[in-house]
Length: 109
Length: 117
Image 1 (cartoon, rainbow over the protein chains, first blue to last red):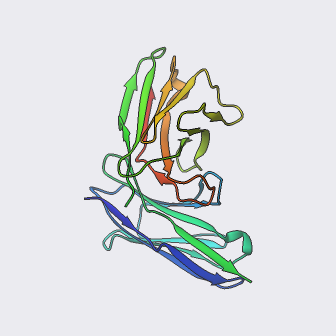
Image 2: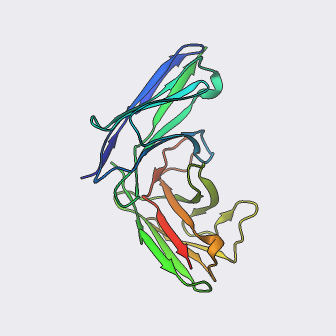
């Protein structure tokens, strides 16, 4: 079956760095998305990776290893506003989204 | 874990026809369901929020007469795109939430690709 795994919850300190991991098993693969979702709001697009490697975008970076079925989202210089859920979603061979349950990130002062 | 399905996965239709998309929560009861549109590599745009047994709440700019939403049961919500036109072509994603709080987890469906010719 198709599956995405990511931690349910993580806690980090303001100003620090945190890495949120995501492993996936899908029928075919056409890329992986990361979204940020604050409570009561729609998910915001953060990144899309389809090739192996690291893509950096400001304080956020996303990494993909297709051979390992693994991705991570790296958040640097954490701010209180980064407290949110982070959703990992993979596109399968039919371009259907397979969603992780989300990682709730709690930032402490 | 909680699973949300959508049907159909793909639909191609002629301009002027209506298309119905179903969103089902398979192993939990969804008090609230959400409908989103997504354009390539962009954030999900919330179209409407529906609560079982009541009228949907539409976001500003979304035509309620064009995008009909019915949340008839705690496990099923439908989105009907009426008189579809090419500009309605998009990826429609639903999500379902078992609880009523904003902080409760939403579970997302796999999406439905609509192409209007």
